[in-house]
Amino acid sequence: MESEAWAAADWPPEKTAASSRRPRSGREAAMAAVDSFYLLYREIARSCNCYMEALALVGAWYTARKSITVVCDFYSLVRLHFIPRLVSRADLIKQYGRWAVVSGATDGIGRAYAEELASRGLNIVLISRNQEKLQMVAKDIADTYKVETDIIVADFSSGREIYDPIREALKDKDIGILVNNVAVFYPYPQYFTQVSEDKLWDIINVNIAAASLMVHIVLPGMVERKKGAVVTISSGSCCKPTPQLAAFSASKAYLDHFSRALQYEYASKGIFVQSLIPFYVATNMTTPGSFLHKCPWLVPSPKVYAHHAVSTLGISKRTTGYWSHSIQFLFAQYMPEWLWVWGANILNRSLRKEALSCKA
Ligand SMILES: NC(=O)c1ccc[n+]([C@@H]2O[C@H](COP(=O)([O-])OP(=O)(O)OC[C@H]3O[C@@H](n4cnc5c(N)ncnc54)[C@H](OP(=O)(O)O)[C@@H]3O)[C@@H](O)[C@H]2O)c1
Image (cartoon, rainbow, N blue to C red; front, side, top):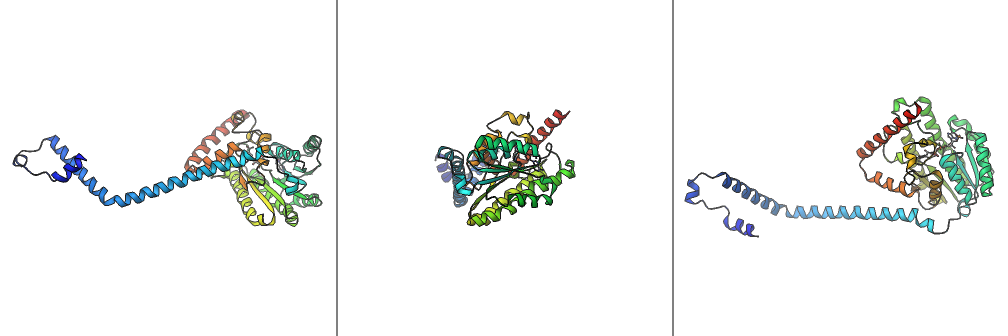
């Protein structure tokens, strides 16, 4: 206040005879410079006052919007991952039908998902490449959960020829739930030109074509019965472009978009379509013994993961299926792309190093 009064009353300082005669000392010159700057600043501030207020309003609106989004995201995390576990389990048979088909069902997430559905009373059709493994898992599930099981031996990397036999094998069953789980991954994260041509065809045939064709086989029956669920397992690597996993992450982005578009097309016909986007789960795909397997709350076992994921069925159209993965997903959504790419490069480089040193 004092300085304002001074500025208003004494500016510009009157030139006294002494001051005009005597050359200014360094200190006086510096003070004069500060005073002129202060005056200039006040002038600018006065003329920009309304702009400042407008900017402050925009800032407040942006902060409020972001805070509301974070609160809503946190609420939906709790609603999705904790509340369904407190209430009684949904009756999936009544909601969708008696049979479920799971592709890639002899190991990892596929097997755990099949077991979780069987624990809720559904009969299971398991599809994989290896007949003995299929028979063993099918018997195990039938004995443990007292449900019917059936197997289909099919190698999805073979392309078009396998789908007619699958259609034939499924034609007399009322399929209520289809789980598109099967996928292939690189042996370890690699730059694109180092990925073999065979692996690229596998990624196209197994990750992309299998889900599309399986939906094409099963969906008409669901639409006719006016109920059913299609769960397609994508991957956290589809959130943003992921270097050193280019083809794999792109194939998972296809699945995510495919599921979301299907949901828009078929929700009105009674079909629930879910895009399931797990981050790391402790399976063979993530190399057992890797440092990833040492952090169970970030990288759950397939059994724990499937238990949580199935409880989101019918509730969320697009979810990671597991609470700590949803926190990772939130971070991934809010972080800028350069930060994601930087983190992915570091992680994938160390995974490659680890895999190569295990091989040596
Ligand atoms: N594990 C993770 O950290 C992670 C993270 C994100 C997303 N995902 C996704 O989750 C899904 C399951 O992954 P997972 O880790 O559980 O895999 P996994 O443990 O490697 O199991 C793959 C399953 O697919 C079958 N399979 C593989 N190639 C096949 C083919 N060409 N034809 C038919 N069946 C085939 C395998 O059985 P056979 O060998 O007996 O045929 C096995 O039952 C995948 O879509 C994956 O991308 C996994």
